[in-house]
Length: 397
Ligand SMILES: *Cc1c(COP(=O)(O)O)cnc(C)c1O
Image 1 (cartoon, rainbow, N blue to C red):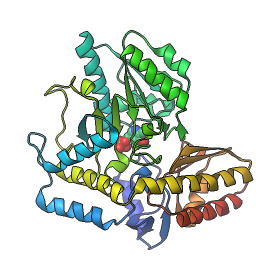
Image 2: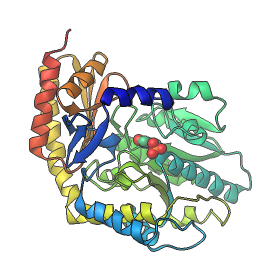
Image 3: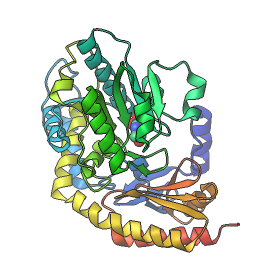
């Protein structure tokens, strides 16, 4: 049965992914089940999405309730869930105004447009420049790809939008060297995700903030992967005590419902006027009912407190592994967003783990990425590290 579905998928879906050869059917807590009923401990959470775990009754009930009330209105009218969700996001992020989107990529598009509009309004010219980071990831649309610093994603699609230059992450002088009269914004992930789980250093992030303040350049933090509690604070920049002018969110923001957002300070957000940006679905009552409920459950279930207990526990476990095997080159990350860099591609380990009922994913070729549901327990972390070590021991080196 599973094999037949996979064959059908390969015939009808575009081949943009090398998918794992399983069809997932249901989830319960931090476990997933495939069509054959095989159980997997999930340390990927649908790529850092399902923070609350699967089958959370309160979350599911909130969605069911909203479906029966009102699914969609368009942005020509007001709706209650989007107002409630925006207030919560603004409060937690320290931003003043919010725009809801349908994905992370769209949140980046909006952030980039807002930065350009801010510069245009101030200087009366539109030809502004954005500095982004090498090895960054911001999404796949033409705009988001334009600020993504990974050659293999970009190459076939050039020319992308102009006015984007790249600097090295965690290298202040390299950012400074890219500043020009037309620089409107600097965009970065406080913890690089796809690029290999690299947290910004405190000096770097503070230095960039100061530079932006001096020159009235906007600082955009992409919190799509590292935000929503993943590092142990609601947003990763709060670990550094540094605030952006614009921030983006998605992934765990909806915990499974496709939704993203960008938010900004009043000073910056006021550059947008009616007609400058829009979306049909973005901020619809269904998606924003999910966002509102996610914030409520983060508070009720003390999710941040949990991450601050389980994050260090995971860190110690992975640190032990790193010490035991000299082909594990580095262990990096923060909270429940960590990575192990191997001397060789990790594909075999990931496949072996799947056979043994553990779902892990890579970031690039040589890094295993650990982004479990935020409600993971220490026992689950023990279970994961036991399976992982078995896989490592069985490697044909
Ligand atoms: C996943 C991701 C995106 C893109 O989000 P989508 O919802 O896939 O469009 C952008 N930035 C970062 C840091 C991400 O991890």
